Image 1 (tube, helix red, strand yellow):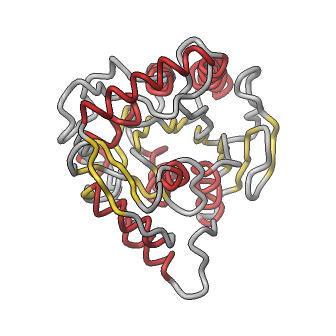
Image 2 (tube, rainbow, N blue to C red):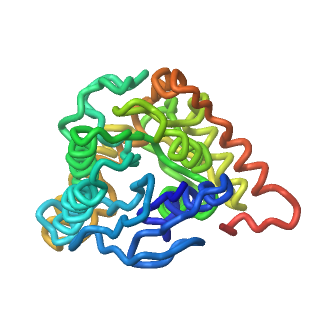
Length: 308
């Protein structure tokens, strides 16, 4: 089978491309830069449709990520990739099976997320990322794609989650908003496995995460220690964190830059978010990797904790 992977030069797409090749598939990497292996076909998601000739299945991992200020050029660029780029991809796919990697950020943050099913409302997003991912996946679902919704993807080569966490440690202290909560996380290996299994699933949306949720404070502490960072976690009162986020967002609007702190970032850490995996499990998928596996690899002799 010939599998096209968009965004294969990135964190998630690269893992999917390598997993597909390991499973015996021929891989076509679509993006502005070559992927880790296979054939490279240039594609700028913001401006044109991809070349899918000879491709059997498409796994769409390419996405613009971040927390851009409303009305900024970065927000417009995000829409061009996450929404318009999706439309271009779906037209080019022309009936081929498409696996579209979305995000749990599409879920309405105002509702209780202690156990989130795929039917949870998708509205009232706190930033452009959540809005554009929701709009993009709506196009994919309407076209009959399989949509995967991971949350907080982590693993070797991560360029977003871990670097942001490490950057917030100051003088041996990390402030987290509100009290400890339970959170779903998604090992990139679990996401890659789901991406390769999903072409056989019924069209629709599926949550994808590790088998069990994690306590926020314990997980953060373990990850920091595995990377050689000793930090004391302190809880910032939620009203204070929210006020700081509003102030930072107001300043970002004036400069058009990404805010140093946002309501979205606070929400991601301050409220329980546990994904219900019943629907994906009924398709025969089982998450095989965990945070402990990742930490054990980091602690293995001779392995640099910052290697990817």
